Amino acid sequence: MSGTQSYYWYTLSTQTVVRADERPTEDSIGPFSTAAEAEDSPALLIEHARAWLESEESEPYRAMAAEADENTDYA
Image 1 (cartoon, rainbow, N blue to C red):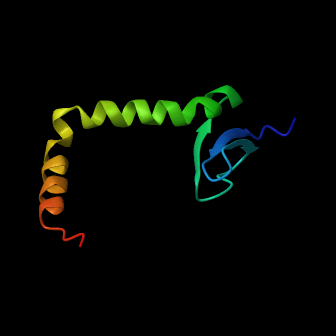
Image 2: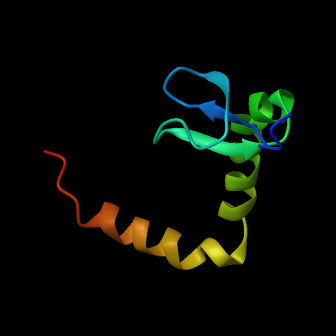
């Protein structure tokens, strides 16, 4: 064995797991220790995003988004 660590990455555009030493593409998320972790990563990211949106930390950003919607003319 060479001693080089390989990681697992989830590629968003192809929705596939790849094994690589470094980030294979710009739209890859990771690194993960196992293929299973990489495969489950989109659901985990959504879970974390929802939790953040419900937290007090997101309040300033939600207020800015609401203000931007009020000032946007979609017609």
